Amino acid sequence: MSDSDDDIPQLSAATLAALQEFYSEERDGLVQSTAPVDKYSVGAVEEDWRMSQFWYSDETATRLVEEVIQEAGKGGRIACLSAPSVYQKLKQGVVEGSDGVSAVVLEYDRRFATYGQEFIFYDYNEPLALPEDVAPQSFDVVLADPPYLSEECLNKVAQTVKYLAKGKVLLCTGAIMEEHAEKLMGLKICSFLPKHNKNLANEFRCFTNYPSNLMS
Ligand SMILES: C[S@@+](CC[C@H](N)C(=O)[O-])C[C@H]1O[C@@H](n2cnc3c(N)ncnc32)[C@H](O)[C@@H]1O
Image (cartoon, rainbow, N blue to C red; front, side):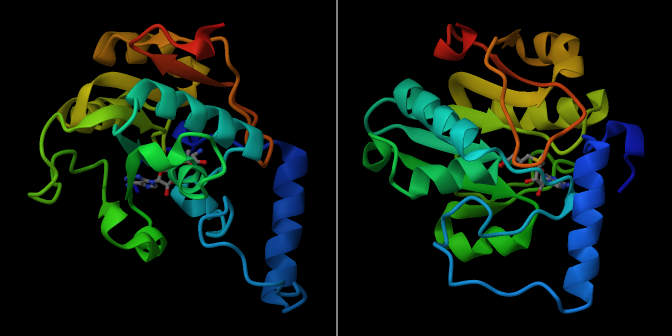
């Protein structure tokens, strides 16, 4: 990937050390496998930081699902762009209203192809290389969490978002992207602070182009 390390969301030093220890134990066969997990549980697909994967905490994934369900409305369609935890949390059916909406996950990581027809392969480097049956402006809410904190990446993600969205856009990314989010998609920063399972050194925020509950 062409992006510099500076563009990648950074883990805190303590989290990094714990993760290195985990990978080392895994390599040495010390990590015990546990009981089978629900295929939609957040973490069913393990984070791979080489793909800039940092999953939301359960609380944040739930809060974002509540938000997209409310904004999509009954019968609404939701696109989760590089945000598989939101798709998974929605599909778990634990948030009220989950069964009244439909969702797809657009992802670069083909491990998510386990979700069948609802998985759409997506590489931000080719913003409009989508399957023919993905119609323009066909999603009531598009939620995106780009892999890199760079204008180049957000610019390309914005092209896909504009293609998919009927109107409402919810972006989760580093606070440092505020100016670009406003310039590229007219998004305003929310006060809600998204949290991740592993602590990130970068401050993350949500941005919307509609008056959102995440603003208060
Ligand atoms: C910062 S993470 C966002 C994940 C989100 N926090 C969640 O919990 O669902 C970035 C996401 O971008 C995906 N990704 C990595 N490379 C990509 C690429 N070239 N094109 C599109 N998405 C990519 C990763 O697989 C990951 O899901």
